[in-house]
Length: 163
Image (tube, rainbow, N blue to C red):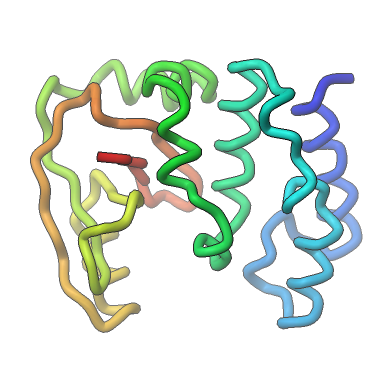
């Protein structure tokens, strides 16, 4: 069994235990236990992973962590490899979407700052996060090649940018 399979097997165990594969619905203490129990928190030896394992594991870790972004340097972590390495270690729907995008496009971010790595293709999603965070909607023109990752979970059409 490889590292990624171990991660998803572990995630399924916690999904059964807590009835969720996300910590969003858990109370504060349950959320801490959930994250501390998953081996993906601080116990990963990132330097020992192959490029493909690193990309898939970072994507899985980022997608399943909602409120602890300040604990990790995701911008630096996503900068380790080329964008195509993350895109092509994603599922087929991400690859198809990426390949269908124009060479230049507009992305949006809702919040109090445009400094974050999390953007979206969907302006309505950015408006939602702007309202939720009492912030603004930011708009940015980018090149397709600048996209580090695309996350389609929760219908947010999330784009990860590191520059």
